[in-house]
Image 1: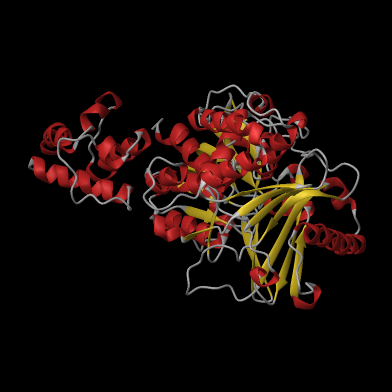
Image 2 (image 1 turned 180 degrees about the vertical axis):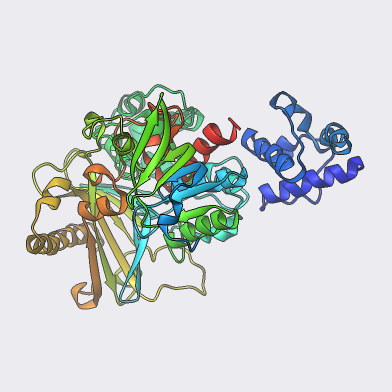
Length: 82
Length: 478
């Protein structure tokens, strides 16, 4: 799986979590927290969906790795390909 | 969904939630989102608890909800409503929130208008209380900055906090009247954190209502919960919670079934939940039973309230020299303060108009006195107090050219007896116990509280309570 595919998976999850948000022009390198007003509870939901839908575990100390779409791609792609 | 309650016998759930009100359903959605096997048990046959609905002769009535507080326009970030919708994954438009026309606080010889724009209230205070406006703005800033959702905060007096900024007791009382009526379980004073939550939800944010009332919200919650695979059982009360070694082990249901659970979230109330536990006395926690119960009259009219000259959405009134928010001790009803509400007076858009006019009047009432009445006397007292409350309301409302009697199609009234039946709260206490348990913990490791007695007030608060307790005690702990 490529980093772009993994980023799309994250975007799909954000669409589920925040149905009112427009995710069509999310910037790769800007923090999701700032672009989408996501708080720690929302990150909990992203992690929860990664576990439920894809069996990917993200330990709490790694949450900062999910800060932007770009960092999600870098951090999660090896997990998807493992 | 179609199985009968007795088929629950012997079943195990990862999470059992007691109560299908706003908090219980919201908690259920969070737990189901996490993929846990969850059941919501409700003793009554209707969902919603304190905020419910019913029909008589084809006419729809709401109980509880006058307005959804915390209204913000779509796209407003970082507010309780935005957080709530995201946590429940409900789109904003699904709530069909229609903003209020405008409301007011009416005291003898003095009134303050407010709307969903805080600037109106500020201007009203500046005009009516010129010497107080600086203090009022300072109070507003302090309330804005307060970390009111801090689960570890120590309760402090809201009266004392407000008096640091406001020296005129009339303005102080006028601020407290709506804030207390929309959520204080405590008499005369309240916790400053809770005050801040209510102040923001009423004045910084505001009021809105779905065209079809509270049922829109309850049905959304139920639908979401069901879609996620959650199970809901109505007419299925919990009789007792058994425990061993400081943990809840099993629940006995009213119908005799016994079920087990890893975790239990109870929205039944702090004292009510304690008394369900088999290791607690039947009269446990007697010092934390709420004392405040309400009555409400509903009058159905053959034309809109605006046709009578009544343009307000909600009026919080007081007719005494000092506002008294405390138990109604001497009589069945205390008509000297209360809330008047016109569900018609929201901006439903040009295409939608309610067929009939509704006038609702809420006031404090005495639970024990209402419950002690024999049936005949109960009905007679309902009639008497219905008329008394109409009189008070008409004295506060702008004079109408039409005679209200001639335009009345139907009426109904609920009393503390009704509240108790719907909510199961001891004393019919609308807002539950005076001392809230913000972290939701109980004397048992795996039994948690959510809802009214956890202490996030109002309808949005109730749902946020269910969400935060499910997050804290179920989702975050794995």
